[in-house]
Length: 173
Image 1 (cartoon, one colour):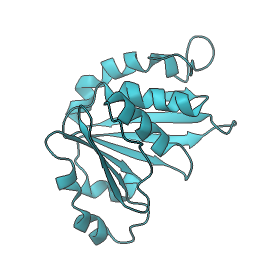
Image 2: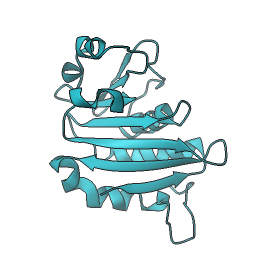
Image 3: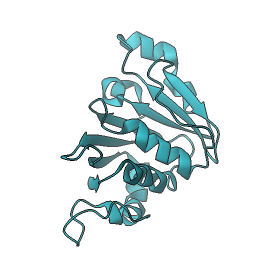
Image 4: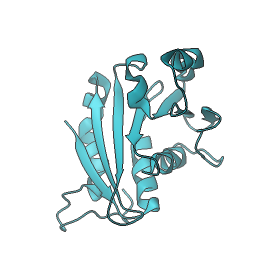
């Protein structure tokens, strides 16, 4: 299973994150992958908005972890600058995904062996336009399989193969 989406604007990418947030549960892990500037933090801004986070969501590249309070708290982690697996172990990812918290890990593929098996992988790539993004969601584990149909419904306006011949990036899910 996988779901291919496309957005034409940064706000469209945030809208995808906000829609995704409505299905997040405590202790969920979302793994973000993609090149530099592909929109990972922009997507997290949308997740934050969908969870009622009032603080500005920014990249944790230099701080490694940023935590935000919302209807579900968010631990936003960026492992890009970590050079050794031991650095990630020392960070305590398992403790960051607390009981009432969602763990979002940028560059998560690099540390996938340290993450829960049950997670959502989100790959972002740039498109032909500066703000255009291709977003591919892949569920891993039983928890996401149970929510998959609802996730497809929520994100239908952003499907890469939308009936109009392209994504409806401006429509709110």
